[in-house]
Length: 283
Image (cartoon, rainbow, N blue to C red; front, top):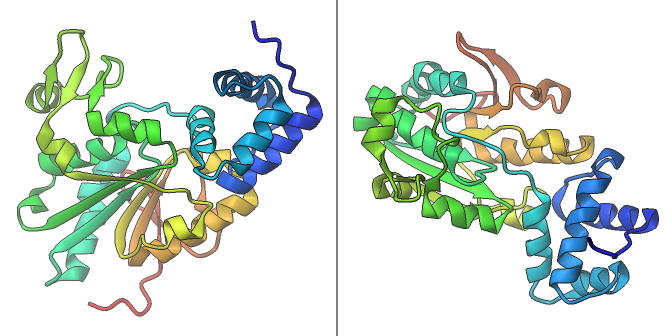
């Protein structure tokens, strides 16, 4: 049992710092979780109290400790084909509209953020290959980003537990995965190569500025961890990243309408998504 004490003042000081760096605001209800993770990193980095560790972490030139702390403070709970109805809308509703607008432009760009350990972007790749007829005529660039470098490393490795793949149809599991000796499942190199993984911090303009000209963004179950200011800032990032007429998919409990007026609601047969207005779209 750790004997490191995190005071209420320490918690508030850390919470404000972490919020400014990541846009994630921890409520009082997360106090136990935050204290536990902080204590782990204080001990692992060779410090004996919060103050010494906090100063070390804040002013470390390389930023390595802040990244390690960010990795263990972020939540990464996902599985293949989660909220599948949005993937169905992707192939049945969104992509037909996008391809009709693009006409001679043969590249479609999709961004998955946060990518976590890769289940979502790989699910998109699998869905396109299995269920979208246009995959033979169109080039798709699939990007996946996360603030957690450990999750990106795991995603690039492409090895998953039985729980992660339990919702996949058996024919897809057998076609694209190999069962490994320890009972885990390794996704095929073909699928791994189809996704470009990058580290992105939505709260850092320098980090998000290169992300432009996307047709579809999946940002599911992230904004619930942000406060109103960070949510609006993220909405502006996504607005700038999307082509006119592009779509953003949020988690089932999230609503862009309560965050920003930049997007309009689109009600498709299988899901509700949000669209950047098409005014000025160059066909």
